[in-house]
Image (cartoon, rainbow, N blue to C red):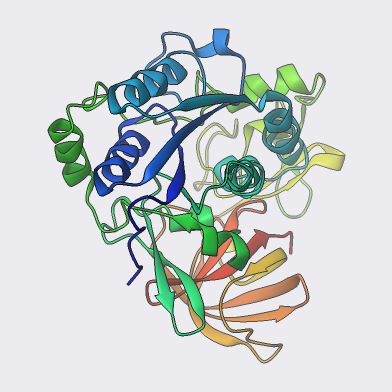
Length: 361
């Protein structure tokens, strides 16, 4: 288990304005820590003002300040809009244009939160940076380990797999042993003004939920029309832009009649969407790039793991091998709809060993 932070130690809490991070701040105040709240402004306030369920803009910043005031702790707002645009939003748009399906929450944690904000916490003289993520940091025999949350339905460890060993040593996840209901009960006990605030549902910088509209605005001309083809190259129909599709997609293909068809691959260079029957979606080899690893190094011979290929997917048994920052997961059984740009995260039981971005075959 993780040792509790001692009373008096300074802890920076990343406060998004939601119930989770607000409860973390209250728990640490109750524990006697010297708590400093920091909120990141990540995109234009006006785009989300008054919109419930977003984070890091508008009302959420005001909610974080209100909670900090109620707790009697200092609170700072850092303008990270340019960094967030460069590291997360632009990366998100470029990935879709390249025919990938990105995971911006992983990029956000990797860059502006666990790199830039962590550096700010150190500059403030803090002994730790605490967040409202549902994950566990457990002190193992060779140092801190990243584990799934106790509540599997709330687990966010998939989005934290790019955390480094050095970062993990400085991070704390006080909600890792709690369920969401227990967190809300604590928020009620602390009389936090956000105790009943709804959870965020969409990607924070896509208020409408329409990713394609954002990409078309950021990358004019990205939604160029093209052909929907089968694996032999026969044209079956037309589409309005590769950015509207992801591997495994069935609906909205613009192809009528016959057996159900699925998106097998995307070819953005030739503006083609390649479709076929579901059995052609199956794959057992998942190539990986930019691998980040927290566990014992498996070497080229590989190690037995369970992998998640999407955040909401059940783990799949596999053998994973590494070769520098590249590698592959070989699945025991075929997986369907494996999309380039998603993350493949490897687990040993509840422990996160690491993972990488899914590359094109």
